[in-house]
Length: 312
Length: 285
Image (cartoon, rainbow over all chains, first blue to last red; front, side, top):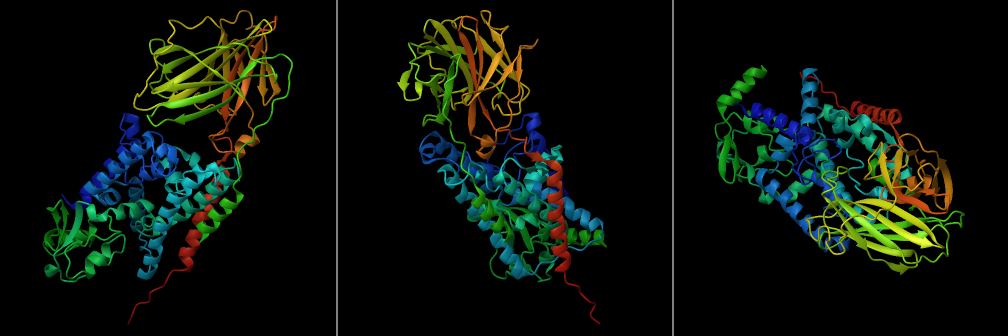
C-alpha cells in the first residue's frame, strides 16, 4: 500500500473519530495535539489549546493551581506530551481534522488546474514566527483575565480568533459560529476578527498547501517537544542524488531535507511527517521514517517511478 | 499587524463587569437568596456559598431552618432521583449580607436549597438550585446531618426550554408549586434587583416566564449572573419564593447574516492580496 493511500485512509478515519466520535461515545479527552475543535457538537476529543488557555492551564488562579486543579493541569500536560512523544508530527500530517480540510482544498485546487501559490523562503521564515507570537498570546492573556485585569470575554483568546472555530463546526451542520456576536464590544470585536481571519485563511488554504500550519500555535507547542518525539524523518546523505524532489513536493516548503548532507536526522521543526518527500524520493533507502529507532517506511525507486508514471 | 491592531482595540474597549444594586424596600415581604459563589477546593470538592436575606432590608431573620437536597447527575441535567438523592439539614451563620450558608459537593450533583423563616408569625419559604461539579468523589454527599426525609414544605419545580444547568436570559422557564397549601392559584410575582418586573398568571403547565435580556449582564462576562426571584404570596401573608440565578444569553446577540458578510470580506481581501502580490513567470527562450 502506498504511503499516500495509507495516510488518506488514516486521515479520514481520524476525521470521523475526532469530529463525530462523541456521538458514538468516543471521548479522547481535552489534550489532543491536533485541531479537534471542541465547538463541534459531538466531537471525539478536544484540541489541547482550549484547555491550555482555560480549565487545565493558564486560565486557573494560583489558588486553584495549588490544589486539585494543579494536578489535573499536570496530568493533562503529561497526556499531551506523551501523545506528542509517541506520534510526533504525525498528529499534524495524519490525524488533524483541520489539516485534512486543507488537503481537501489543495486537492480541489489541483483538480481545477490551479498552481500552488509560491511564497519566498525568507517570507516563509518570517511568517513562521507568527505561530510563536500566537502561542505567547494564548499563554499570556488568560492569567490577565483570571486576575481581573482584562474583561472576562478575553478568556480563550486564541479560540476567539481561531479559523477552525467557524469552519470545522460547519462540517457538523453548525453554521452558527459564522455569526457576529453583538453581545458586547469585546465579543463583537473578537467575532469580527475571527471571521475576517477565517475568510482570509480559507482562501489561503485553497491557494497554498497547509497554509494555516505556518501559523499554527499547536505546531509551535509540539515543536518544543521535538527532541523527544519517537517518529522521525531520517536521511542517508550518502545515497542522496540531490534531485530536489523532496523540496518540491513538501507542503511546508522545507529545505532542510534536501540541503542536509551530513546529519541523518532531518526532522525539521515545521515538518508534518506527511511522508510526501519519502514517497517521492527516487532513491532506495535515502529517506525513511523511524519510530523509536525502528524503520517504518523507506523511500523506493519503484514506488517513486510508479507515482511519477501515474501523474504523467 | 492587522491581528495586533484588532487585539489592541479589543483591549481598549474591554468593559468592567456588572455592578450590584441595592434592594429597595418593598411591600409583601419574602425571602430571597441574594448572592452565590462557587469555588473549587484543593481536594476537588466544590463549595457553594449562599446568602439568604429578606426583601425588606433591616428585617432580622429569626431562627431559620435550612436543608438541601443533593441529587446525583449522570449528565448535565439528568438526575437519578430518588435513590441518588440525599437530604441534609444545614447550619448557617449571620453575616453582613444576611444568613450565610455553605454547601459542599464532591460529585456531580444538583443541589436544591430550601429555607424557612418565621417573621411576625408568618412563614416565608425560599428555594434555589445549582448544579455542582465536584471531582474525584472526594467528600462525596456528606453524610452528617442526613435527614430521613425532606420536610413537607412547598417546593417549586422548575423546567426550561433551554439548559437548566446554565439558566440564561431569553430562555422560557416553567415553574410549578408542589405542596403549595393554596398558593398555586395565586399569581407569580417576578422580582429583579428589588423591583417587581412581572406578574404571571398560572396556566395549565404552571407559571411560564421568559426573562428579558439585561444589558448589564451582556456587558459582563458569561460567568456573571443576577438573581431573579419568583414569589407567590398566600392570602394570609405567607410567601414561597424561588431564586434563579440567570446568566446572559449565549446566543441572543448572534447575527449570522452579518457574520457571513464579514467572512466574505475576509475571503475577498485575502484573494485580492494574493492576486495583487502574485508574480508572473515568463518562458525563457
